[in-house]
Every structure is written in structure tokens, then in C-alpha cells.
Amino acid sequence: MKYFSICSGIESVGVAWNPLGFDCLGLSEIDPFRSAVLNYHYPEVKNYGDFTKIQREQITDRPDILVGGTPCATFSVAGLRKGLDTDRGNLALEFILLAQRLKPTWILWENVPGVLSSNRGRDFGSFLGALAECGYGFAYRVLDTQYVRTQRFPRAIPQRRRRVFVVGNITDWRNSAKALFDQEAMSTNPEPRRTKGRGNSRRFEELPCEIYRKYDREGSYKLEKETSGTIPAGGRFSPSNSGNALLCVQEESIRRLTPVECERLQGFPDNYTQIPYSGKPKEECPITKRYEAVGRAMSINVMEWLGTRIQKVHQGEI
Image (tube, rainbow, N blue to C red; front, side, top):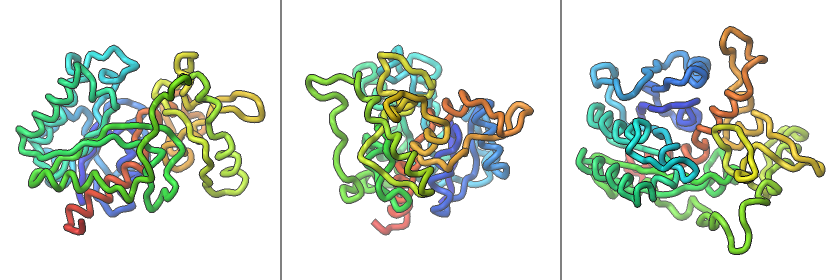
């Protein structure tokens, strides 16, 4: 299948879908560091930059899938909740305008769960309504990284990361539903975000330091019971953000997770974000840039599951 990736970041989609035999027609990223990561790993694929300016005649072939996650800060419950009233929020609608121009068979859009309640649900309703006006039948679902099992990740990835995924199909809404809903692939529904009588203040105690000690010592990934909080894009920690996955308890002390550990918590290969940058060798790649890039990425296991499902529906296998 052929896909076009927008707001590509460090291209979780490619890491997940290239092993499935998918062909990338183009990327779209404007951040300098993330663009450098794309050029390092995908030098043969053109980065079109600002996706709002992409026209159909620029693309060599019609994509089967248009995929991307537009900026989420404007919808996040941790942000100002301005929704579609900002330029960044309006990029969600620009995504649909690009779908109008490229006319892919499938669309796959990702965002934070806060989009469901932004402006009392009106923002998400506007997005879905615009999608329907373009002729796409759709389905949406919240998926959590820690529960999504795939062939490459048979025991999922130990990170609590809930995201909304919208799948649209130009021919039949039932195809979208088939792609998104498969109970056998999910072990359970996500647990409540907060249980009665217990806040988030102790969640940092559950971070997976033991996972990485076993990985480094034995050379293979082993999943323990512990799961981390969501890896943030900013790479910051404060008492009000104690679910932050950049800290873990190890031998009765608290330490910051390394960039490699954060990459593993998203499913990336080790040192995927360690690249030559700003005239310096990859050994001097800025750590803060690596944290931010990984925090803004999509989890590889989730994208692998979605790509596999869409592929099977597209080929009539389910």
C-alpha cells in the first residue's frame, strides 16, 4: 500500500509500516531537528514541508492512505483548550482539505483524548462532519499503547499512552469500523485514569527501571508488570506532572530516563534519534531535542496494528 505522511515528526509511521511492505510517497515536517531525523533515515523520500501547501499535482501517485497527527496541544486537557480557535487547531481541518486534494482511499488521523471534549465536543464534531462531507465513512477509537499487541510487539509496550484514532474510508464506513475494532487483538480495556482515593502523585514509583536493566544485561527486550506514564514532548518534570515518564526509581534513587529508554518506550530502535545535527556528529546530538521528538511521536506498536488492520480490510481479508 502507498501512503503519504503529514506532521511526520520522526516518522513512527515508517518504522511501523515499512516492514509491512508499505511504500511512502512523501513526508511533511517543518521542525528542523525532526526534519533532520527524517533526512537521516529516509533520504530517498521527499519532505514537502508545510502540508497545507501541498497540491495534488506535486505528488507522483495517488496515496492509498493519508496519515498523520496534527498538533495536539490546543486540544490537550493540560493546555489552554482553545481547540479549533487557533491556527494549530485549524490544522485538523487542513488535514481534511488535503484529503480532498489527494483523494486517498483511507485516512488515519491521531490526536489526544482531550479532542473528544474540546469545546464540549463541538470541535471533534466539526472534524468528523467535515470528513463526512468529503465522502468518508469513519470510525474512531481510543487506543492505549500498553494494551496493543502485534507480531513485533507480542506483549505490547510498557507505556500508558492513550490516543484517539480516526479511520476514514472513501467507499464504506463499515470498512473503517472493521479496521478499528478487533477485540482479539486487545487484551483488555484501559483502566481508569485515576482510581478513587488515589491521585497521580505516586505514579512515578511504577516506572520500568527493571525493564532496562534486563534489556542491557541480557540483550533482549523483556516486559515486566510495570508501565510508565506518558512520555511528554517537553521533557519536563514538576510535582503536578508526576506521571511523567522521564523519571524512574532505581535502587532507591530517582533518575531521569535516557533518550534510548524513551525510544524503547515508543518502540523505536535504540538511538534512532541520535543523528548528526547542526554541523556536529551524532555523538553530540542534543538530548533535549531527542526527548522532545520522541515525546511527540506515535507508538510503533499501535501504528503497526492499525496499518495491519487497514491493509487486511483493503485487501478483502477481513
